[in-house]
Length: 64
Image (tube, rainbow, N blue to C red; front, side, top):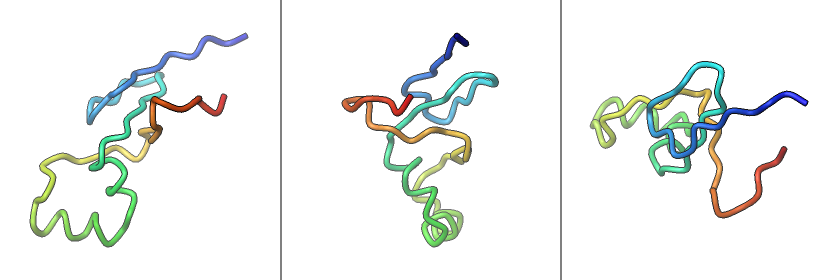
């Protein structure tokens, strides 16, 4: 069985070869194209969210 390395609550700090998990509203909103465009214009969030971040609420079970 392959070991899974999790970076929980990663924010915008993505670690290579790990599953990076966050649920911050900025990460969730960054998946919405209109919000991403708007955020670039008005800088509501000053962070770029990597699309490889696995968005997940840590109070629920993981899917694997």
